Each structure stands twice: as C-alpha cells, then as structure tokens.
Image (cartoon, rainbow, N blue to C red):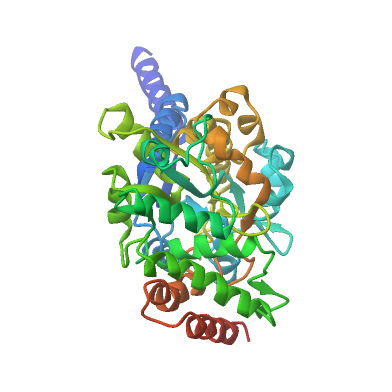
Amino acid sequence: MRGLMTKALATAALLALTMGAQAKETVVWWDFLGGGDGVRMKALLEKFNKENPDIEIQATTLEWGVPFYTKVQTSAAVGEGPDIMTYHLSRLPLGVSTGTLREITPDELKAAGIDAKNFTPANWEAAQVDGKQYAVPFDIHSVVLYYNKDLLKKSGLLGDDGLPKGLDGVENFNAALKKLKADGVEVPLSTHTAAGDSQWRIFYSLLGQQDVPFLKDGKVLDGGDEQKAVDTLKEMASWVADGYTPANVEYPASIALFTSGKAAMHINGVWEVPTFTDLAKNGKLGFEWGAVRIPVLYNHPATWADSHSFAVPNNKGKEISPEKLKAVLTVVDWMNKNSLFWATAGHLPAYLPARDSEEFKTMQPNATYAVLADTAVFDPSSTIAGVASPIYEGMQNYFVPAVNGQLDPEEAVKSLKDELQGLIE
C-alpha cells in the first residue's frame, strides 16, 4: 500500500512539473534596434521576463535595414522566422506583397485587449493593407534638428527660451548657415551626406512642406511635381556646395561632428536622443544641446515620419499555435502599456494613454518636438516604399551623388522617377 502511495505521489509531482513546464510559453523575438534605443529595448525585454513568469522572450538583435528584412523574408518563406518581430510600418505593403506577414484578426486583437481607440486613426490604419491588420504600432519616430546652444547663441540664433530662432524660410535658413560659417563654426549643419535613407528623410520632409506628392495615383512625381523635386534637391545640394555641410559623410561621422562640438546643427532621427542624453549625463558632451522639429523652409510644417511596430511572420508550413499567438499578443500589449519608458529613447509613443500622460508632456526634449506628430508625413503606401525598399535604393544611387555634387539634380530626379515608375508598371 505504502509503495503504491509513494508511486502515486511521485507521478503527481512529475505531472505537476510537466504541466508547469508546458505552461511557460517561449516567444522568439527579432528586432533591428542596435543604437541608443536598443539599450532601452533590452531593458524592457528584461523587465517583461521578470514580470511575466509564464512567458519567456528569447530576443535577438539583427542588423538594421536590408540585412534584417532579407533575413525575415527568407526565414518566413521556409518556416524558420521568429514568433514576433519589430517592423517598420512604411515597409508593410512590401512585406505583405511578399507573403512575409501574417494577418492579425480583429478577434485576436480583441481577445488580447488591444483596442484601436488607443491609437491615432492614421497610425492604426498605417498598420493595415487592404483593410486587414498586419501589425500593431509601437511608436512614431521622425527626424529632428539637434542644435548646439552655445554655438547658436554666439551667432545670435538662440532665443531667450533656449530654442533656435530665425531658421524658418529657405533664405533665412541659408543666412543662418552663412552666419555660423562666418563666425568660425567649422560645420554649420551636419547630415549623413553618404546615406540615401537619411537624404530621403530630409527630401521627403521638404516635399511635404510644399504639398508635393511623391507618389499619386500610381504616378511618381507626376507633371510639375518633378520640377519641384529638382528644385528641392538643388537646395539640399547647395548646403554641400557652399561649404556648410561636409560631403560624403557616413552616419557615425556625422554624429561625431556634432558630439565633438564642430557642428552647430545636426539632422538625424529621434533615436539618437539617448546618445546625446547619456553623453551629457556623463559629462562627455561639453555643451548644452536641444532638439526641435525640422525648420519650416517652405509653406508649412511637415516632417517625414515612420513607426516601429510589432508584426507576426507568416511562417510557411509552421502556423503559429493559438497558445503561442496569445503569448505574442500579450507581449505586444505589455510593450505598449510600458511605452513611456520607450519614449526615453526619443520616440513618441503610439499608445495614446502613454503619449497623453503628464509624465510624457514634461519629458525633454520629446515634449518640445512632439508637435511634429500633428503634421507628420509618412512614406507613400506602396510596394516601392519603406525601409530597405526601391525608393531607399534609388536615393543611394541617384540622390547621394547629386547632394555631393557628383550628379546633376535634374538627371538624378529623372533617373529615380523612371526607375520607380518602371517597377510600378
């Protein structure tokens, strides 16, 4: 009898252990967050794993851009993709067209407590293709103008409120660059002149300020819009030709020009806010800095923007189980509810309860440039657009040489237009 009871207890214990092991769901996570925001994401992942003992996120960070999206597409095609991944909303149409993304149905979102009303309609709808939801937004990120307060103040370009002044309008902006140069500033404006993606963000912002559609009704820069694009590109190229912006500068070098105190202004994404914040906090920056939305050079405010989101790969031959999907969407919901911390990486939370909170409204420099969300211009919704898309490739091939004085702007715009139009047709 005693032997039977011992055996029964042992069986029960083994069953309990087995059930416990089965109850813990593993979620394989891929992201491309390797910069200053990547440090914040790693902290969020660690916090999630501590607070959710029934789910374990196993995270891997891959190289941003073409390498990431190529691996995602090829892995999903053979059923070897992750359970969840970060994904740029700008690339969603291209991802859906290649069969890389799995739809997330309204019932699945509802069961996870993810509600569209907690996001701005434009941001939520940007995560859809043909009315179907393929992602959940996590943030809005854009480019901003970082500035060295000390250098701007010496040239009379800093207001009493600590914000730049006299930069709006093409003539005023160029006059400010000229004044900084005349006052001995080595680099009035630092941008990544060797990077097509960075030049696209500036170019698209300036097009938006003129209400010039890059793509409309299947036509790239149709009619008179082509000449406006040429004029805008000429303006960007003049900053290099006039000696205000160094030519052929790679991404890390353009940041170094700013952090070393050589550049008075620097155009870059909000994702570099933690870089400058941490340097200043550790006493390694050597000057006061700030960040504002891109100056209004043309008719009205407009700034390029994109969104990081969460998406589920369409792993061919390996359909995600209901239990796994429940765990994945639990992660998505938790991340958005904790996105106030993500804002310390410079981003604007997509989750409205976080963005509307008093804590976010006093978070600097985010609170200063948060207004850009009201006039943000997102990439065209097309299979030629988005991160690591044909547009980005065309920018690298044609616009980078034009900005650096190696290709006529008219030829650059025409070549880009012809190439992209050919892909659409």
